[in-house]
Image (cartoon, rainbow, N blue to C red; front, side, top):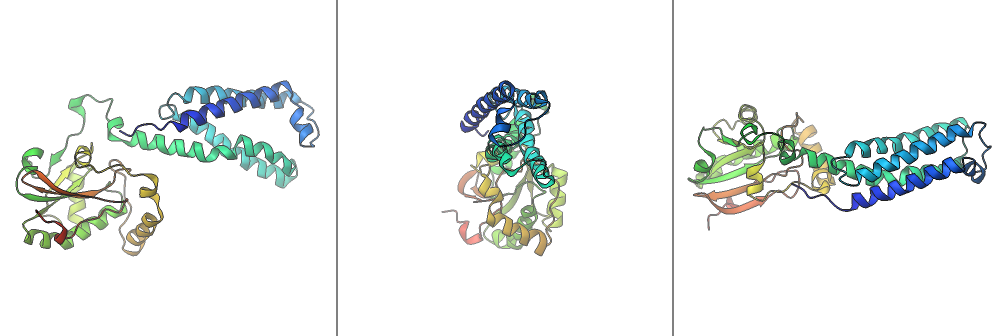
Length: 308
């Protein structure tokens, strides 16, 4: 499970202090900001004081969310939405002439400077809750999905015999998953000529995994369903960083795979943040691991799969 970074707690406490101070200032001196920005004072300052009260209450929420933003992500989400809708309303008010441009100072400090850290926190919270360790944590051990082999053998018994190249794909809905299967189909003969049996490891149920392999004409290849990603962790295949999942290379290859080659994007099955790769085993012993450097799974060529 990914450990929580420390910076979100600092950011949320700073946001809490800012909101509480800004709210108190608005409540105690409701006309001050209008005087500073050269805007006519409102006829009903109590309405503006209510805005200060709302902003201040957000500060209390941020302070509590700082304990663990991954658990209290709804508070972060509500705050982030407010910081998105505020500038939208401001742009509309400027276009209609209701507010002068200098009022944007409040938008800068109240909203814009918080976009990046709040968006990052929501991304990290989603990544955290997508982990199988978190998703299945509330289930009793006997109700959690198990790793299984399509041939019906026990996993450890299957891995302990022969020479196998385990090809770990990402979730079945990923466009690169289909591309990887097509690539493996073109190389399986070469691998078998070297005495290496290719095996696909995925996060989908066995039945869905079979459909995936059938589409790539890999009907004769054994596959392993690993919904909890236990084998991925066992062979040291990490979850991806943002750049590994959404970097320029991934977008470029994704366009080529999805649009130019026709590999469709399907339903997410499993951990969308998990990276793929491959592992060469000989009689159960690890000969070499080939981790993917980003979301595009790399399959080693047969010449790389040497037992010595």
